[in-house]
Image 1 (cartoon, rainbow, N blue to C red):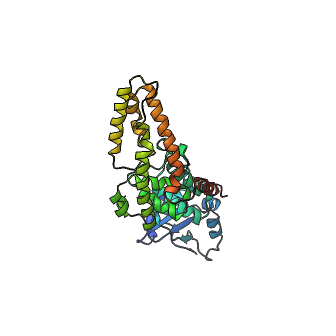
Image 2: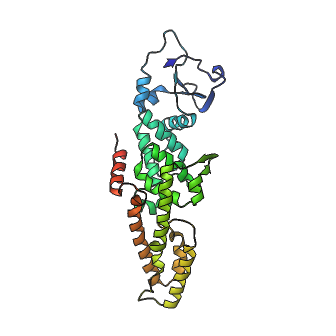
Image 3: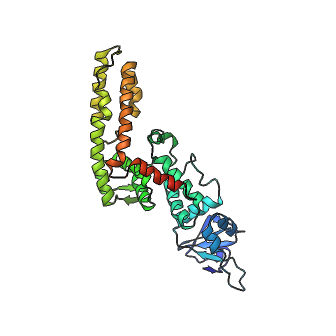
Length: 319
């Protein structure tokens, strides 16, 4: 509903906080929620959002000259991110530009509500860059992710994935959760000064999946370290000993990470083995990665990758 308050920050109710970066003196519409107020440009909002376009067609009260106001019921954090994404082209760019999870979450919430599909698609691409649905995407994730790897981020992203039914990102998110300890998974963690716990259904998925991933790590991923020396090995006894050393070291880790457990150690493994044995082990490990990735949805009781990626394509192609 449109009303007509004063158009300067000094005459606003003292209970409202002016969001200075989104208060333009020459703006022609005031937006306010429970605790904050913004003065922006109705034409720009209407151009990007059909909901705002319809909202701004409501007749203004007769005889009023002050800047009209629209009352909204969104959080200040989400509304700030959403408005900045519309009004400042550099604030929320598509990948590979970096962003933050709180921004992605706010824009996911409001882009659907206010029908700004270009922002929703951009938010989905940021999710995909960080929680991909392909093995190639996973392998290049560290180089291409746009949501920073702040500790415990998977705990914070899971509710978003569930809220917006982004099922195609679930395997990667649940896999990341499995890399945490059982007490953290069971009890929750502190993230950005708030406690986050996993819902009961997903907590069971993660705990059961973690046990399966540990099994696959020991029996499939690390099988590359149980091989006999390659026929072209230049020093079989040394290579056999080095493989045993690496196997014992990694087997002691209390972590479920069968897709990546050797990646950070490839250089060390390469220096400890002859070229033939290193190439043999690397190929065996990559074969294990393919098999584990294909089984990931099944491990967590989800639909197949084919079905999940079809859902992703559908979401990405909404007009």
